[in-house]
Length: 111
Image (cartoon, rainbow, N blue to C red):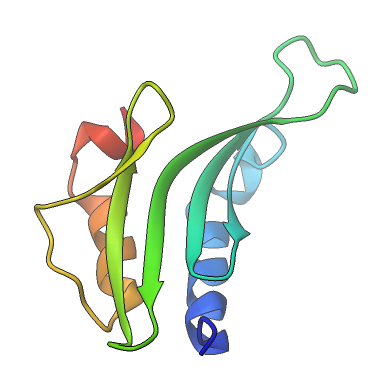
């Protein structure tokens, strides 16, 4: 079973809502979709105003376990390795994880 389309749509809407319209030319929040997880990514425009690609920095990973129909949150360390976030139990509600990333104030997500 693949990641539910409704959850992908929830993540997409959450990413768009994270950045106000007036700042989207400088910074963004996006996601990368894989078979069993969604990675939340912060994007930034080139600092020098050039036409180079925007930088992409992974912030968190949402892992979907289809057999249990639940999501688990992972955080990324300075060596770019993801670790299970043990402050929040797995949940069938992906929005619960997104709310935690946005509102917890935990610096492992937004530094």
